Image (spheres, one colour):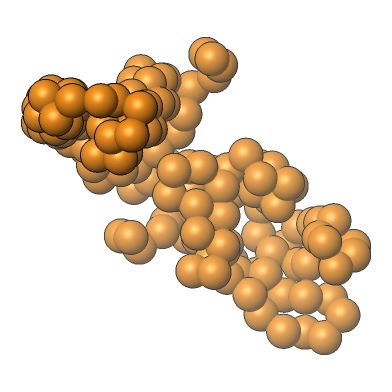
Length: 162
């Protein structure tokens, strides 16, 4: 497991912590009960309920490990506490595509909040890394799946709530 800090918003940290607690306290007990009940039904080789419950238990334990790791490495950042003179975590960045003068807007977030369709890009993504530390007026070259793109940074501001 990596010990690298995982930047995230407070709301994300709280959501993940709550999910972890729910899995450890409520869901773990529920699935154990289902397994015990299924075990009482007899022959385990042909017991579909038992095997389904064991599979679900395995997935749940994997999720508990993953969440324990993420929450343990969480670095909660309040974007409003940062200056946003340069692109940083929680910056909303307006870019102008040099090819066609179209404008795109991205918000730099943690990998747990990332949702490219909504313009939320991970700080650790190639685009996120290319934008970090840049200022308004800077030119940024980004290698996208569709090829190389060059953007001008039009504006940097603090993100809105997500």
